[in-house]
Image (cartoon, rainbow, N blue to C red; front, side, top):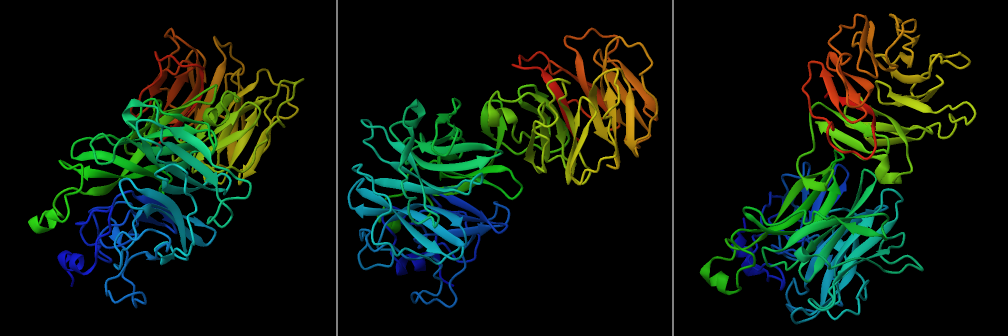
Length: 612
């Protein structure tokens, strides 16, 4: 088998890439130099692409878990050259690029690839040097293939993008918007560092992804304007996650510990985009110096992740070549290595961290804000989609705990995570004369549907949610404030503000407070896991237990800062939520926190538990 030294001697190293990078050995795990990574998720696998390294114009690695990455297999048979270990994904480089290594296999200089799938075709964009010098001039080209690992061929006769900027255009990254299916291309123009801001651009691609859409034009999204960015920004990459659009980028000088990565949030692919005030997202830390070239992607579990490269400390540049060759230090000094990190969304924006796991709960603000606690992950919220155009009334978890639904008062349903959208009554329940509005939502045990209940007791079933009757035409003493299915999904309860309980399907009536004089109105009902009893809670925190429901305590004798407005089952007990976000836990599950004492713009209207 060839050694790295043998391969280095048999194939020239390209200018602009690390000349001593370890051999990109076919079909072997690779953890060495892999700069400017780009990630494609396709067919249940991950594909990572990088700037020329290890003897390949376009090195490609694959992974099933985004942890262990394996170099592309060799071509067998190899119709391209006599190298028995040839595994370059790009077998035809653009003819119009400058030959920086004339007569050698890697004659051109290619950098910072971006790859996507459009239809059944894989499209790879690359930065191509067109003029020697430092920095010289670069333009953007495009190649295509029928498989994610190639072979890609660039048959273009000239650049796709070549800005009038003296240094040209670099760092192309495609983005196919999952919300519309529209393909876009992002890139960066160099500007004049220190004098003219560098800029990030976007333009719509045509249906094939190899040219620009007719009548489209480039739009400037970002430019250098924050101190941490230094004189330049670059490596733009866009991702849509949980209904929100994020634009990642690098800032400052790449061969330094000051290099870092940040992000902006965009209203649409063409902006406007607002940089997060807590940038940078990634900065030098420990043995990772100068992290940059962020490549965001949504993994196979629906989590947001980002690949990036970093310098292995204490180095922030590549070793001098060929001096490192004679000293034998080429492959033991500076490298830009790839790493993949998980991202979570907090109140301050995106942060690096593992997705939440285990039990927890969500609280829902009247304005559509979702507040997660414990293992309940933030997956999206109507407020982020609609601004203040929503008045939320209920949130409900999916059976897996990996998603939730939010209902607003006019009957719109917003789905997140593994919650699916099956339909919604929209404005149908709203009756201006009768004051009817949507009141609550419940998910079927299969996660194949849900019910929407109104304050007049009407029921709308979607997906596999069967209706078992409603309160149409019934004269109610108080509005229906809560409804919940039985554990089997073959029935449901509704409860009115007077404590009247209405059972349908296999829901068993075990009693009510309908004939009692209450200090405060009832605001919720929770059935026991056996379906043989339930608890009612009033807005003063008083609890009423019926059937096999065991009384575990209440807040009835405690003076509350704000009234209780909901109850959810938690383990074998229950917890109550107050409108200020206070949580009162009467269960066998841990307390994961609350908003009590935290200023919030709108009151809490509902909560949902995550018990897995």
